[in-house]
Amino acid sequence: MVPFIALTGGFVVARLLGLVGVDALDGWQPALRAALALMFVVTGVPHFLPSWRRDFVAMIPPAFPQPALLVTVTGVLELAGAAGLLLPPVAPFAAIGLALLMVAMFPANVSAARRGLTLAGRPVTSLPARTALQVLFVAAAVAAAA
Image 1 (tube, rainbow, N blue to C red):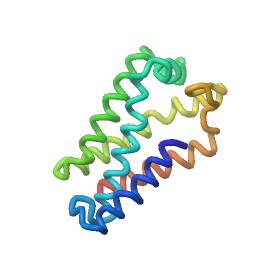
Image 2: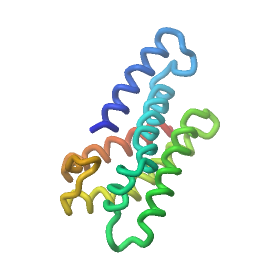
Image 3: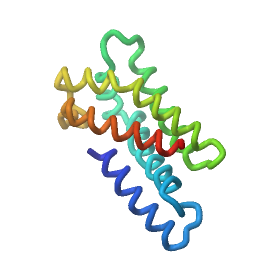
């Protein structure tokens, strides 16, 4: 739920800043890119925090090799994508890359939900809710790329 709050709250704040004169955020698309960047910082940083990292590693489906490496790579890609969203010349590419990354990471979310895992001591989001959120997040990234 925290990524959803970061995305929606970040969008509202960024859009309001654009309306009151912050030119870089003046428009729905720049505000959406800023909100997505916030969301990916919020989701990317925990990949490197020990207690969260253990939970992320556990989420990787057993069929995938080197889960710790995959967690590192996805964390780096999330943070790099967040930075890319804030650079207008590369923002569309970053947004599409992040949309593809979210699709690629979805099996870990499915696996975690089916196995009843926890994330930071709390149950992972249920599969129906996680699927709906994933559709929303991917749609936001695609809209940010347009």
